[in-house]
Image 1 (cartoon, helix red, strand yellow):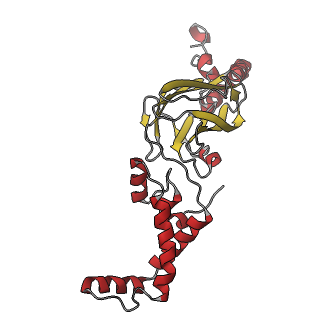
Image 2 (tube, helix red, strand yellow):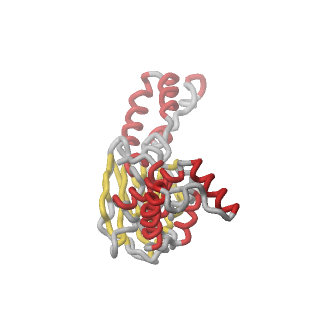
Image 3 (tube, helix red, strand yellow):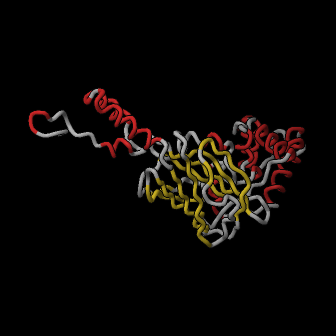
Amino acid sequence: QVGEGPRAVGPQLPLRKVACVGADLRYLVVALARQGARWSAQIVWAVMEGMFAENRYLVEVTNDSEHDFVFDGDWLRSGEWKSDRLTPIKAKSLTVMEFNSSQPRGVAGIVWWTDAKHHDVYLSMALTNPRLQAPTFTCSAGMPPTDLKSELEVAHRLVQGEQTTPKGSGCAWVAAALGTMTVVKLTILPDLCHYTPPTGASYAAAAAAVAEAAKPGESEAVKAGESSGHPSAEGPSSPASASAAPALAASQTAAANSTPPSSCTTLAATGHLGPCPASWHVAAVLERPARR
């Protein structure tokens, strides 16, 4: 109770809770309605202190891969770097990066790195630490996301102590602390895929293969010929087979020239583009909508 005896007025206001960055806005509305103008000034002042208090976000990166990552770019919607953003993420080592913000929206942004040697292995992060909502985080190692900026809006909501390992992401993380100082422990897995940009030849080969596979009559005729031991009605010298042969040969040659790691093979078998070159998924390349 506020005060003593018959002059006590309502429940005591936990102003320190209201001042907390993660305080529920509904609590403030109820408190103002109950206590009236007498406590309004104190509550508003406490909330203002909380809204403009320092908002920190730490990411502890354990790099178990063989790649050294160097900074390649960032886009911070709010907040700023507190550590040196040019600090490389060395292989088989621990690197700590920190962001902070004194703005009402807290920390929010995306950051990405590439491997220092060939620049074909990416590390991409999207993170937020809003004042009045739960912090979020998402990361991928290997191939970059199609639209990293959009990942900022759909990033995983952090739950303290919960391990997160998205399939095909090449990394895993757990939130060690949440609130005004959010701490995420990120582990980069050893087996990472290399990003190979698709070329005009690979797209043409994929288009030809998909077009050939989309002809059910011809496929059934070929299967019938193989099962009976006789050639199909069209035969190997038919125009359709002759036109598809160079495209399929080009696709097989492109796939043979690159040997995917074990995780890439798994992703290719499931039809998920993930962090793998387009030459390993002929049909899936054209079905995937292009986004920037």
